[in-house]
Amino acid sequence: MSKVNKEKKVRAVPVGIGILVFVAAFIGGVVSKFAITPSWAKEYSVDWSDDLGTLKTDISYGDGEANKFDLYLPKDNSKDSYGLVVYLHAGGFTSGDKADDKKMLSWLCQKGYVACGINYTLRTDTNNASVLTQSNEIKAAVPVVIEEAKKLGYNVREMTMSGGSAGGCLAMLYAYRDAAEAPVPIKLLFEMVGPSSFYAEDWGIYGLDRDTDDSRKAAAGLFGVMGGVELTPEMIKDGSYQELMKPISAFRFVNENTCPSLLLYGTHDKVQPWNGVRHLVKALEDNGVDYKLFEATHSGHGVQNDNAVMKAYMETVDEYLDKYMPV
Image (cartoon, rainbow, N blue to C red; front, side):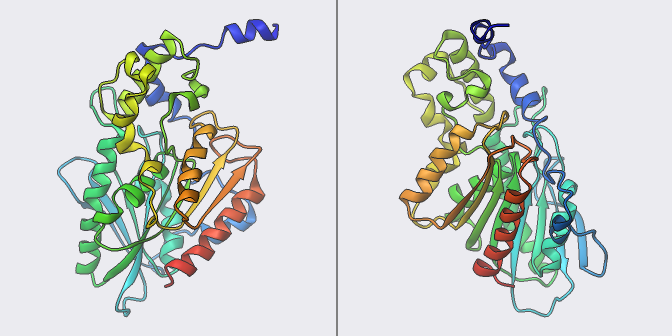
């Protein structure tokens, strides 16, 4: 097939399947544990045992069926205060569970942190869950997590937010958008491949950058589902949709007080666009935030082809935890 014919077949997703893109395309992209198997990865992936401490599961933070969290409490309960690391699961906003990250959370607990995995209401074809409602559930959960840890004898003094893909997006929203209302200071963010902006021109992976009637309809459908708002093709065309997308666009909340941030993205990502990363990087640079961007130049959403980059990212996570939230 000629290049011209191939290009003719590239079309934006129709508006009628905007929700299906949200439900299906994201779900196939990544799992939070990222299928890490190299020998070095064993340092950051620990099997839970009671020798590490105490694990409390399915603690409620709200009325929703999914409003539950797990607490990993370190063996040493003699300290006056502890750092908390919240790790939010992946799954394209439509699947996944806090238990998926048990090995990561166990590693954090082994380091001496109170660690927490939080579930949130997943988008289905029968509910109106969105990135916005999910982020608000995380916001509601964090004070309950800290209070529960205190009841169990672990006084939390500061915290770190983290996650992968959908979880990375939600972690950024809490660390950037909701930091001023957090019950304790947020000292660090580390996240992998989480979308931080929603400009149609950046989402060429779904054909939303083509500036056609079809592409604008598709952008209105997809972004409307993500933001939990009503968008029209006309709003996409004149740019007014961006104000309605602000509550789920993490980069727009970066300021001079934003916490240090570690970011990992695949430059060939077909799930969340690499093009959008530039907005986040510019915001961090413009505000003088300590950040590091790890570019996986041979990988897509799963960062599966850049072992050295993944290793460097995890080594830096370890370094920055010790630097900004020492045990």
